[in-house]
Image (cartoon, rainbow, N blue to C red):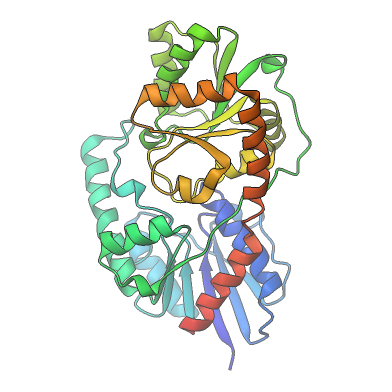
Length: 365
């Protein structure tokens, strides 16, 4: 008898999207069980942007947005009507009323611990409380929980009081960018350190900017590149830079894949000052393009980067300055990090992640 597996891919075009897209891509390759049928739930705007390669995969529109009451009722009803043998939620957000077989990927618990100053404080606090509650409910009702690192596994087990035996680690991976390198004109012939990603508080960009101001005293030629889609938080950081009278900080806004590749290939160092991560994909991506990585030693990052990064205490600006300064001043350290980074990236595989996820499906089914 055939088994129907539903994968909630509403996050396909978000920060979780790389994980979802790679999982779908490789599941079509590694799952050779002809009795398995997959239904992939997509937002209306994503229906034309993703097509299955396998006839056993079907895409279905899902009109219920994450973190809404309609999701709690409408998506639950849609799932019951689909009569799935198993549903995989690649994020914790899901209808708590859906009580059949579920596997949940819990990427990290960052949202339960950090606020967002760009949001209304009272509304954010309420949503954060609801999110914590959903984490507990999702962990309790899931037949298996997937996490991207051992750190997150332990964190989830403690936070949700879950049996760690039902939590499975499937490491993610860092791909090199396939698009042709595309120079950013204003940065050509400049020496720069860089960060790419969201500017949310746990990313710790304020301390990075403070560290850069100190570094400029000994390295007046140095520039700082902060890449990522412009939003309220990036504008706040831009205001901070102006208030400090700090020069040579570049807010690039959104960068294409080709531009991001060029930044990785030409930066003096990729700096990752984060206070909390579930996996730390950008650092591995930087390593794949031979950028030396200077990283926070918080949460899962030493687990993922091993000896391929030069670490600092993200709560100590002086520690950050010293670590970046080490890489700027010691060419041999740079070369060691670049060589170690190439080896470290090779330890991870999206295909292996998909195989391990399929093994979770089979054990639950």
